[in-house]
Image (cartoon, rainbow, N blue to C red; front, side, top):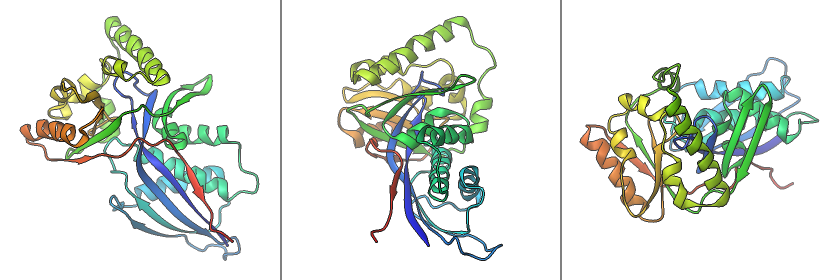
Length: 301
């Protein structure tokens, strides 16, 4: 019998100008307690149970994890999985990336010679489709990543010395729908605007310069176009307060991430108040930024 637990954090991607390239890990975790029996009879079925504040209500998350397991361990035995999830689903907080990372990590525990870490991280990015959420879930901290024909490249940094506030509105916005709101082409001025600020964003994270983040997250490529589906977003992005470091749409939305010096709950209430004025209910989460990504624990013999 093989027994272990695997845990990965939530993530907030893009951070405004870092579209599809930058993410922060958040200490909201998806954890799987796994039992595998290599001697199980052929054709035996896996068994799954779900718990936690964000327990899935359909098989989509399980299918995502199982697809990732099969990528690394195509001959995996039947599994007994107890999944505990604290990551809001469909909220722009990297639940699908966490599922991919979880499945890849499970698969790596089930093969005699698992791939090197870099190959596993690449598998997560390929399964997820883009590297920002994927690598924040895998590595934790802050990541700046590029992924394409020239391979996968990532720079990793400790999370910034700020507190995080996530406000999750009751708005349904699938990632595919959020992407469909964006144009196929951009004006040169908007592209230059984002290149400048994306470079500044990477430098600010590398140097730990909180004072640069407010300017660095200002975006013209995706947030303005998604604002039509997220009531109050443009107003939220313009909020100003001495405690506020930066504010951005989290991933494809609809959640909003704020980084703050202090008064996390109060800033969350400011953001939630804007949503409320637009007739949208929301909830406030104040998870720490996660320094650690994937963790694996094995019971003592």
